[in-house]
Length: 201
Ligand code: NI
Image 1 (cartoon, rainbow, N blue to C red):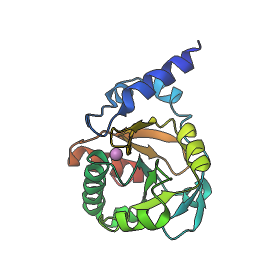
Image 2: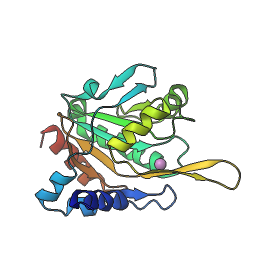
Image 3: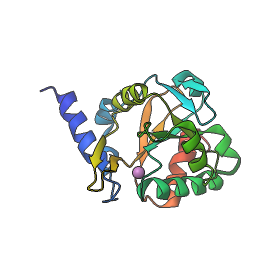
Image 4: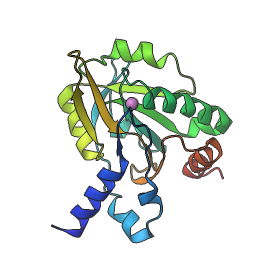
């Protein structure tokens, strides 16, 4: 087993939380020295999704600007609505600098989250957060490239929920992974990270 693979497993297990547990932590990543940060820098890459207006987008659409990305689903009971609400506040706190950043919410439940459903859901949040979904195969490919933990969990009533990574990914303008914001991270810390990301500190 290669060291890189071990680090990937460590990364994946630390960022994986369920919507019900709701206590994400990516402190493992943040406490690592630079060399290990480089090991997780391969997170990311091209993707093929659609906006809530049905417009096709890919990585190139967003290159040139730094990007914050959160992966979740509209039926999520707690982590997603909480994070999107907080993210709205972070974007408002950034003021004019918010325009230097793309904030994307990527559905990991494309079977239920079609563009129309996602559009309605996103209308509850401010801050210019962009909802993206797509063909299940395309979403699955992106989840893999971005090393997002996603697991469908069947419920007793025949419905299902989705466990997923609860951290917000921070990517620089070249599409390289540079850090993350934890679930429930305090606003000052989150906004500071976003300001650093846009180079406005
Ligand atoms: Ni969620």
